[in-house]
Image 1 (tube, rainbow, N blue to C red):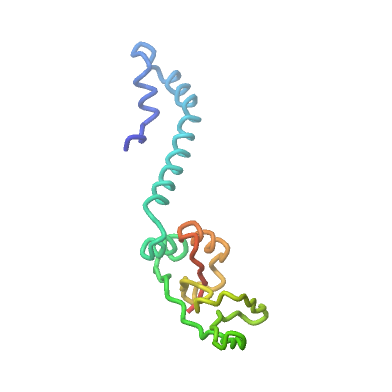
Image 2: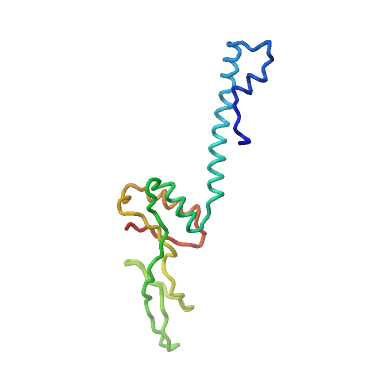
Length: 161
């Protein structure tokens, strides 16, 4: 509200009453066109910044942002849990005990160190999209939006159901 100005009216009001003629008013209107364009650009920037500041990495806010960006009409995108994967088990003869390791996708090597493992999954949460959106959603843009709002240490997976 503070930045919403009627620039045409302002220019006309700042013109002395004796000089208010149609030609001079038209000339003033063309002179203030760049100012109006800059004001519109600033307004869209301000609105985008306000939107980014009011939404954060909470599940409810992240879900709202994703639905606003990718499924505005039906709002079917939600944030879900990732199923617990069974750990791989290693037996250390020297220590006479078992170690549970994180499972790896096929084709990725299993790196073993001596400190043990935390039995955690590869992903912390899943972004669940309906199957109807498969192929219509730009996944790189979706990843960029989620990376903008999520916590830095969280890992996510995109799932179509």
